[in-house]
Picture 1 (cartoon, rainbow, N blue to C red):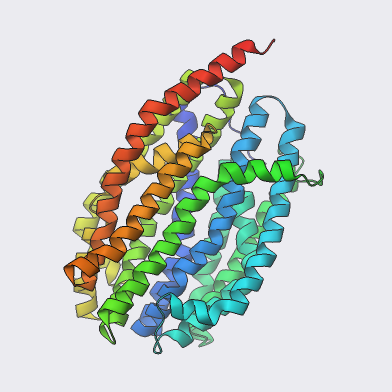
Picture 2 (cartoon, rainbow, N blue to C red):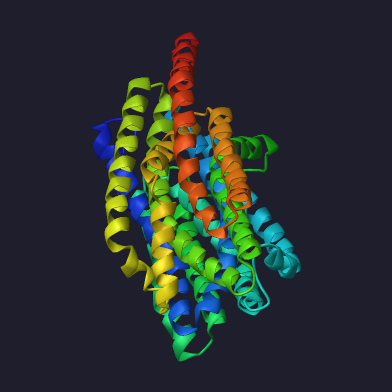
Length: 457
């Protein structure tokens, strides 16, 4: 077992980097699950198949958001209890997180297998793309248990300082997926079904890895039966609700975007626009998932020191992760304008689709610097337990995006205008979130300091 990182001492930048960079890289590798599938499908099966899998993409992400609900909701609680020296309570929260993931996997598998046909037609599939979407979603949904356990339980490993093991959890599955995709798609000629099967097998491997790691005697808080408690479930759900909303509603909004493109684009053009949007969304994941890894990697530092009452260290950690996010997004922004065409050509051989997608991609990502601030402040607000504020900021951004997606094509009369929704929302939401954070979070931290002064040592 690798050496655990001390969350309560040492240079903040070094500790944040040791946690955030492996988590960021893990999330970047995790993006390859969907992107590699789409690359092989676009190159080996065709643009219609790519559009079909693109319709499934937000649905798959929505299912995975429940792993975020438990993982990002439970891990700050575990870190806080560790900071307070209450390992038994931390172990109790970990076990209840495991039970929640088990129950959620059963419910989600049942709902999506039974309702997939109607859902796919509602969410942007056409008569031309439905068969591809249906095949992919059916097989992928059957492996929901592995996806939820691998994603959700990994956060409980990282929050104990084992970011390297957390990175290996994701890399194991992603590398296996990269290897299996061409085998199933081309060698066995399974097409879309092969891509879905490769993902399920890969997630099963990650699931086994992380559960074995959490059962090891070398982790401070082990996964072992500790009794079911609605109180523990409530704590996990309360902390996890905001990051859950970020991912779940992103998925819902991408579904709405696909549906609007199909509606306003009409026959033929609608499928082309959904294909373009699928590639744009894939690129957006390369930005948002690693950025989420950076901010979530910093959360154990913030939560641990919130439990320990080290407020200066919390403030320093938040400043550090905002700076890291901005640097990352600045690099990506330059790369977007220089290299978008090379990314797009990995998915399609059509010159028309490639040219249009590059244009849409530059529009969609032009405000990622404000987005960097939004992501960091919302996640670290959750880490200090100010869930109401982080939830409001998340909900505001999602509601505004939905309004823009519906309003822009209706007002401007063109489906392509939908791609402007993201940059408008990124800018406005970042301003609102930053204003509220600077006004309210220092007061929240001051209340924590006062609370600790009243507790006898």
